Image (cartoon, rainbow, N blue to C red; front, side, top):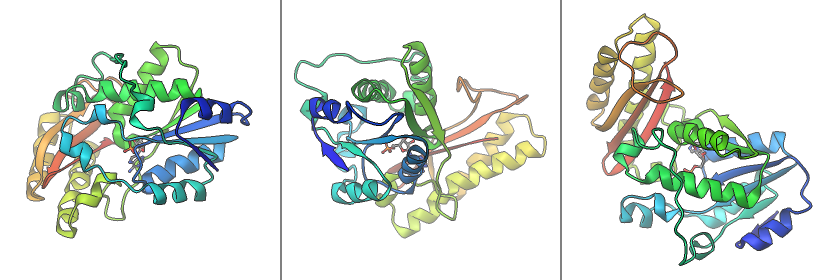
Length: 275
Ligand code: AMP
């Protein structure tokens, strides 16, 4: 396994790589969710590339960026154990030199839900992802369903901009009690972790209601909210949407997705499920 910090060396190292090339983009602080992506890439690609870069522009709150968990030596070990061939770990200047000005905007998909709560966040995600794709030119890119809005937005961007890569979506990896793995879970106390399970419980309630024939999203959301409050979670948004456009729906007649963002103490958590 090789590690590089520069675009130039990265491209050189990839010039004779065995196809297909798979890219897993991460902000580090790896957990089993990231490992699921690495495994999927390893099973299907000749060369597996992973990036570790905490993208400052996608953080709305400076402290969130500064406190974002970091564990580079362990990340490198996990990547090596999971068969990564090449790690791209650029410094800030390499990705955003002083002269940098461009931002990518995927209209609609980047403005609702996460986009409304965290203005500019998804534009910054789209921008860093297209930069990583352009640098790596992978045949496949791997993204987790836990960040479904990000995944759908990148899928849209790949189609719209004729990018020659295929997005592979990977199921959300969870703790045994249902809590979705997240780098931010490290900020949770044991007690808060029990609260945080409320996101999964609320999603389960939505699924059950839907399975029992409930079509009114108002009714379903009211029950979900009850569960979240019961778990002492502070709801940021709660939505039931079309699973492709993420536009909100009132009555469910086909596939739908339930999405939650909620604060557990100071930690903002997101989760979603098809219902
Ligand atoms: P991050 O390091 O948080 O930017 O995440 C990097 C990639 O890992 C993204 O594609 C995420 O959607 C994915 N990911 C994060 N958490 C999970 C999870 N619990 N299950 C599956 N994929 C995940």
